[in-house]
Amino acid sequence: MGNGKTIIIVAVLLMSCNYNNIINMNNKNDFYSYSKFGHNDRIPLIEPYALISDREGKWIFQSEDMGDKNSINEWPVISIGIIDSTNIVVNAWRMGSNTYKIWLIVNVSDDNAIEFKKEEDYLTYLRTLHGDSVKLFSDFEAIYKEFDKENGTLPPEWVKYQNRD
Image (cartoon, rainbow, N blue to C red; front, side, top):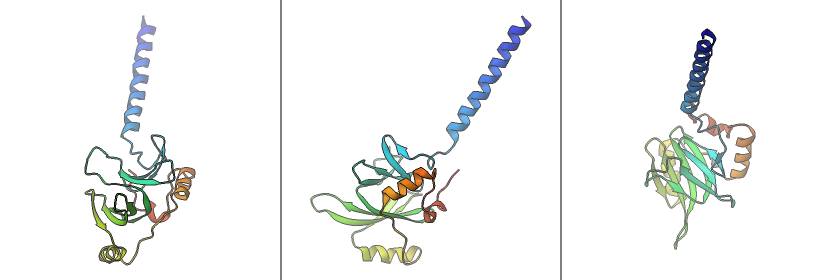
């Protein structure tokens, strides 16, 4: 009977250790550590925003918190850059009967964006934030390959702004 109790105690201890590991894994922030979103390629920017491939050569800028109907979702993206830890620049086509280019400066902390239809207006506003320019990247396939190969390494200009809890 003593061996039976010992086996039960050991089994319960092992199960509780495994349960604690599962809880810790679920609490870990993995936003920057994976490159797929469903079946599409994914490039994390600043949480919760990422670029998601449409598998046809175009990329979508979106929040992964898509439950909010007001969440920003732009497609197709022309170029993208990160200004600082809370601001992302998105240059995209606004599709419709009157297709035109837009520049967005997205404030990640409050999920708001300022839209500019003219590059001059965007650059004027950008100067009020942090200077004359921000490096915009447009070769998303190359960035994705770098990210995928290096397990989460993005352009050095971006990594310093990512919150990796």
